[in-house]
Length: 109
Image (tube, rainbow, N blue to C red; front, side, top):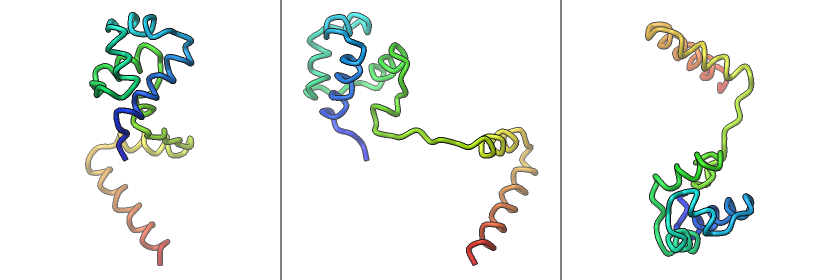
């Protein structure tokens, strides 16, 4: 579910407050006017994706935070499977997919 302008604005305000910055200080770091930041924080203006990306980069946070998407945690085994799959050629990828499908179908029976 997508967040509305007010919810995204609240998340921006939260980032600013956690960083202990005034609106002016925060806006200056992002090269925007304080009034623009205020409109974003209050949900009165839609925040362009470029601004969200800039905030994420400047304050080292995930863009997922602004869209309410939780980060997916992978186990070491899952990461290894993904790595090996990506290194495989198309023929091997097809066989891996077929094997996993057969094993999953068998398990569900």
